[in-house]
Image (cartoon, rainbow, N blue to C red; front, side, top):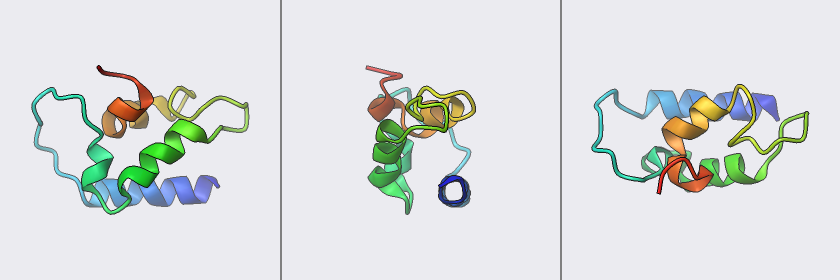
Length: 75
């Protein structure tokens, strides 16, 4: 499972730009090949400790950057 997450992160990194978007409440991952499914995965899957990936340590930075809307980091 960790392998799939790392592959998804690699794809996200390869297909996104460093340009700063306006501060809209959106999921940046939707504009990538992984798309909405990645954010749904982050919001519903759990890490080995049982925490949802959106809030789990080590995953939360990715969630804030790519899945802010789905993970509830913006309104």
